[in-house]
Image 1 (tube, one colour):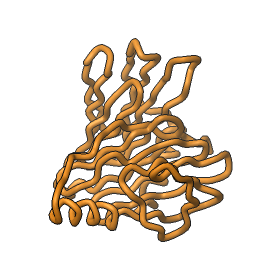
Image 2 (spheres, rainbow, N blue to C red):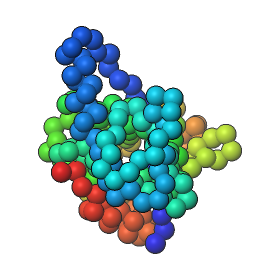
Image 3 (cartoon, one colour):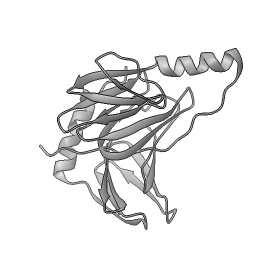
Length: 209
């Protein structure tokens, strides 16, 4: 089966201050967990490199990197889960009661998002931003020289994709996909390929509970 690699999402943390702010940050960290860790997964955290194991807490700001024979699931209880496949690079840039943001720089990533979670969920890559309202979808970012190409495919639900350069918006429904070539944002919507939909079947094995 063809493997697909994830997308980077650029986000930022809202500033917090005082004891209430510290509790909020702690709550964000506590709700994120690594599951189904296979092979060696490295995380860049606060200037250090740590190895992630099954059941470890994931922190907002962690940059997760898989190699050619590793992958992992990251889960936010009751909200969403994703699987970063081989040779991937992504970061959780925001995770609170209102918003979750994922940054995908390279590779394939598959999402399973709870349609009843009651918060905004988005993924940003170098070329597009995808806004989600409960769905199973796949994203891919591949370098092409100094530029990047991206693909999104949807198995369930809807994803709104905005091309960063042109600001053009595309609404993808189940069974649809879009390809974006280069930072100029040349985009084309199409039917999802059979290989993409087959790969997306594993979204059902990614928990968010």
